[in-house]
Length: 229
Length: 355
Image 1 (tube, rainbow over the protein chains, first blue to last red):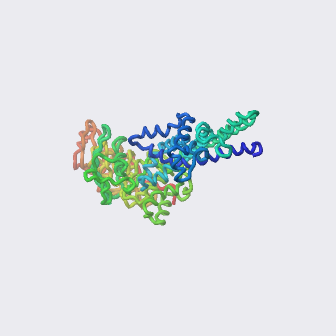
Image 2 (tube, chains in turn blue, yellow; image 1 turned 90 degrees about the vertical axis):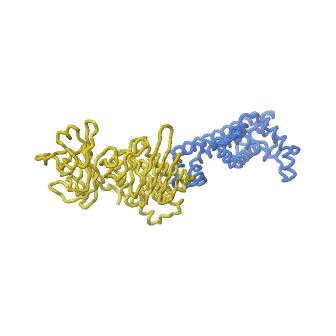
Image 3 (tube, chains in turn cyan, green; image 1 turned 120 degrees about the vertical axis):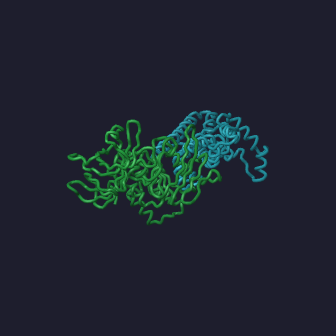
């Protein structure tokens, strides 16, 4: 990218990578959670609360908790390192984990709304034509919910690009490994004469967020048109 | 080829309590809105589980609350055509049509599929999206979709209710063709007397969750086995031109009408109870074209009104007159009188489009 320095492009690409992986990994889990939450059972309110907790949790506190659990001396972290050689702390994969936790509620919410808005009448029609539960889910409910899923994924992706507190606390600010766009902006501000760079990166962040927001809205609008049929 | 139905189901203050056995052909569930017509169809399709009930379709018990039998809708083989068509918006017409066919083991062969598509006039619509179809076209696709799933019973829940008069007239002939090719019992929910008179073989009259009449369309609409007559329905064959009018021959004589269609074609005639006058002697110099000699078979007095059922050969006519007329003319059962027919509705117009 001609108008970005190599360091800046690196931060941008790293941000896109971490957010993409985070959304891709969490989407199936979010869909399953949404499916569970769209049915009624004991403890639904509790599960709902846990899923939405990251929305109100201070990111830095979350980062600290992650560091305690997944640090190489933490219980889970030590186990993962000894048994599988997996280290999350100070790695981009750790940033993915932090992003997943904070974008999970957005995805669950979007998918759940799409599932709950499914047309009961079409479901009944499919039943009388011989379609069982899974058949109806795969061939009727989900295709009609896809725009909602995509919109949820895009919103989660855009929100994930802005994650700062949990990432810097959990996986630190390592160039090329964990220095995402927000961290690069922060670093630029700490550097004498870095204001121009910070401004450029901020503008870039805003532009990206805006583009994704427009994309999500366009998809939703098209979807409403199709479903009006 | 039959459907046994017994349902007792409470919904709030509404109690549905019906028992009947429908034979082959079209059974109309006829009555005002809220009579329980759609509820019966939903129970038959398995979408409603009644408090108590037993449903046997084609010798297969699909519901028996006493024995704990409940076959879910997807395994019931009951084709339901909804008022609002309910086509899948993300599939084109062809995929919609074949949705049930694929899930029922493709029991209809490809020639049969092609035949249904042709008979319903859908050949040119196969690649369209449902949102680009007119209301009438949507109804036709919904009919084809249900039919191609090779159901054991076909349930039509007011398939014409959302259409305007012109569209209805356009769909009715398609429904008649459907009736003629379907080999399974058809239940037809309607609150339109015209539709029932045109399509039905049997009628279940419903009011407030109870059956108020049941039998063949000719008997029930003429008041036999029902609380009150609605009018006469006759099957007739178009005959020759007679002095500018067309003769329609029925089991009891002939009726002259302005125009009907091609000679030899079978049509259904509807004569409303208010469209018949009764005379003791054959009237002379009268504008009515149709004066039939009949025998009074039943007189039912209702306050100042009376309903007279008359036999005309094998057909049954019904007239609504005042009680005063009954006294003045000294009408009585077995009396030979003349029925002066003011107007006749000839059903079964020609199919306007398609092959």
